[in-house]
Image (cartoon, rainbow, N blue to C red; front, top):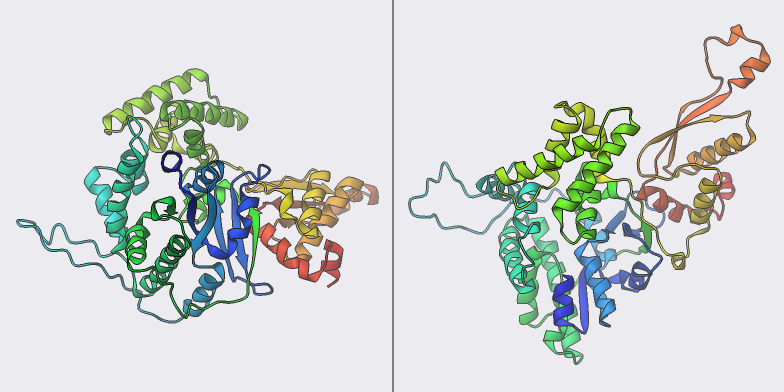
Length: 473
């Protein structure tokens, strides 16, 4: 994406993203903003009516915006407004519409055994068939080997042609409901490009950055005149830029459009696709994490693990080791063949615990400012991973921690869960006097930040500008 934009030098870069979030692009690209972050669209006062649009440093959309800014291009999001997407979701969540998959007809290949090689019925079967034919265990491994690892940099237009072929196939697998929404979206993106051309820009000066499955449909709609869809629903919404995290980007945390190892691929990105270097670094970091957990993990084992990872990649027909080779080699060399030894640490390292940061220019709500300032002052960890803390109520500083955490609970801010409270060592109170019992007054909490923490802090502003006011309300 970066090479394509620097070679083409478009005057306008249109990126797949909610059109009503275009005013937030300068904040997204601000030097003080550090991905992962997300656009957060919500209906004020309505529980559960939200949408997230995440970006990490190597997201194609984020790269397109960043490089487009560097070459002086105009920037805009061109997809359906979030106000329309939320309205669509509200109207179709429980409509009982036919969700069966539909595909384009495919003529049988002469000599093909239809029973042993049926046409895929949906995208999942299509992806599984590609994976199986290529000889890999998972679609993620197939994608990494087929598209991410290359002997040398492929010309951008060649890569675009390959993505167009893949996207064209993927687009044929849809549902009636999905087809209607995708058609609206593709016509909206085409209309944005057509409006720019009609405003005086040459067509070749406009670059549309969208998912490969939408590309051919956007191009066809543009060629047909780029008429915008009519009668698109809309609801009142607010959009904010909020921090996001690597765990939220990982498929293990339920975000299907993320990737399985955000931290590992961040190392790939920072090393300009040098998979061997990223693999070595990952194994060293994993060994450090294992030693912190009390396991023996030496540099010699890291060297053995890397050599094994490289050998496995060669046996599997890959140009370099990737996520699967890291996991297999770590289990064999650092875990002595015992998956349970390295499983937790491996997951923590591959996914990572990075939480993004948004520029102060975003203008945090008073509640967000109070939350982060108080958590920092009281030394409470703000991480997207569970952390347990003991709070002794007889210590002034820790008693203040207790008050803060209880206020968050009353305000409905998802961050802290009280696991134990009251007198420590319950059931043995009679063994000590009042002072001894008082010394055991403590609470046990589990803390975990998530994007929902910031989302609720934004929404609770309508109840007050401080946690005290919100709790009173």
